Image (cartoon, rainbow, N blue to C red; front, side, top):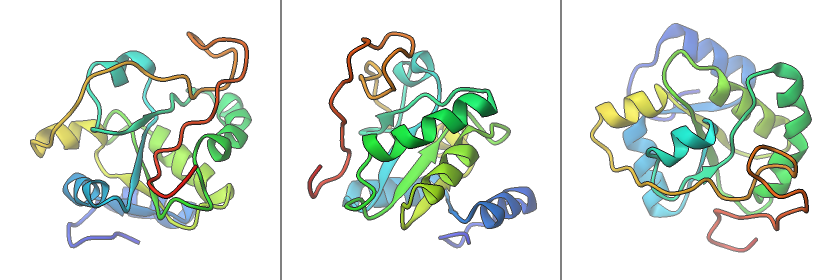
Length: 163
């Protein structure tokens, strides 16, 4: 399931195989994002995103509880453009976080043709010396989440071919 030559841990490979998604090393994810063939979604909490994230990544904080995660699956499809995105990759805190695993599994369930998890998360991103940008977490979370107005915000699309 891995999509580059880097070796991944057996645990990550098992998670990816059971979740139906692929793994990307940060360097490969960055290369694809720059080429416009990969949309990156940061599933960390808003303060972590704002403290530094993958350039161009969509902020999509994923709750820590399973019930809340299940309730947010429908919003993932609405915020992103499953029919038009060539592929989507999720990034979280580090190697021990399961948020990106949950998000990638949800993307598969929601019909994304190609979903990935960035192995090692932002810890690996920083260790690879890849660029980060700073800025606020936009209004892409479901209405009523912390810091988001109650009315529905229009969906943001990280895709380059439509919305």
